[in-house]
Image (cartoon, rainbow, N blue to C red; front, side, top):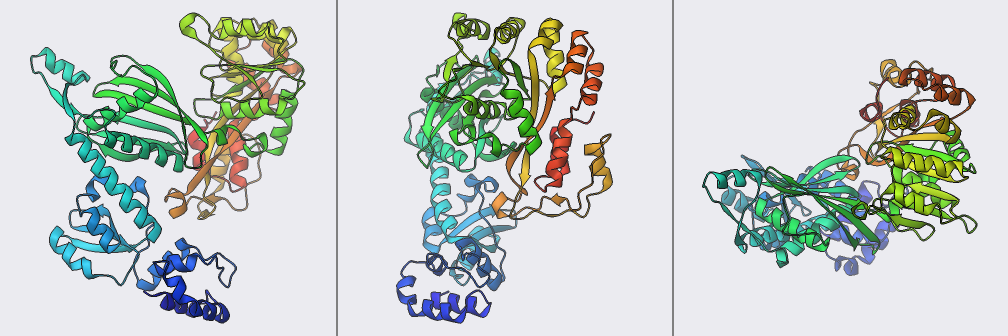
Length: 580
């Protein structure tokens, strides 16, 4: 397809008015030099007759409809790099501007941006002895992923070929050695250029996809590379176990960990930069498993940790109550929730709001999630008997106004937090419980005296993160009924929303229907009624009933509000919160 034909087609379909089309045709010769006509036209920063931008993605979708072919948004999460690299050479793919995206027993799916260029189709079908089916994809994505996919597959293949023989040490291999069946594996060197390239690509892709964790998992016959995106694990790639071992060694080397030691868990940290030049920190954790060493990298993006409170998903009344709680002159404020629920983000946002030139904010963390110039941050060192309790004792001599404790894990730390609150300090701390009332019971179970707890505890915030609906494809949910609404709200009374929404799926959200996450919050503010009950050392049921009478509302009601606002779905909320 030529540029002039593309412009005329858009004019005939009402995308471009006559004047714009005529002007573009007059300068078509110079624009055509930009390569693919879709790219040439998109570079003009045009808007169609409805006022929407004429982007490469929209033009590609239009081209697919005109050609009568399916449109496909290329997503590396859904493509097996190793298999598609066996379909054709990178030179063949580049020459014809095509990219294999799926290989099946009876057919192969090929992405192209030139629907009329079909000279390669019969030739490829004959070579593969499979039917060739075409889809239309963005020419920018085809060019990019042709380079990335084939380079990655070649790096994995070459790394495996260039490895040297070493003794295996997974659980199964040790058993075989005990039976006299010695085994060896060819494991590439950690500094091999191919391994370096694979690790660099893995990080770049994880940052681009907003992943929060990267998992390198050895299995019996192969190894998995998985990423947690918006709270859900996705398999990205399958690699030979020997290549995964070299990747693990490479990352351990960068994290200043013991590369030779594979029999015990280790922790490490790496600081690197993303494509935008921002600093990103990776927290590393290894674990010996039956088939080798597993490595998990938790990604801490400063852009996420530096959010302010207004962008975290608090409802206006929740935010007002939280700010009233956190602006008390002294006392203990707890933030609870499971790992990955956003506790650190909430605490950092709150501390940044309180950290002024007149306030001394000190934190005690394990590890320090992000260095912030507004705080005095302390890293605990359990190896030298400098834990949370010891660190808190030392901080008390540093004239602090506000203290943040990374986690209350034992009675000694809890008692030190109580003493800090009694001596006029505001103490923030995280605790691992499922809801706010359980945090009170947890401290009582640890052994904190009830009379001290009711005198110092200001309140508790429990939170979760739920996926938000993709703004590009969410649609009204006709199946939403009173039963699903009641599951979120009863026994409280809440007006059923006039129109709930459902997840649909589109290229923007990788067909999941969700993109991004938002917080659900429940606040337990201690008043006279709750303090009286706490002083009587209640059981969990009585404490919860009293909290309800005093105005506490569970997480699912916060989720119901998000459903009514069209931000998420009832199923997503119920996936994260328990029904009492």
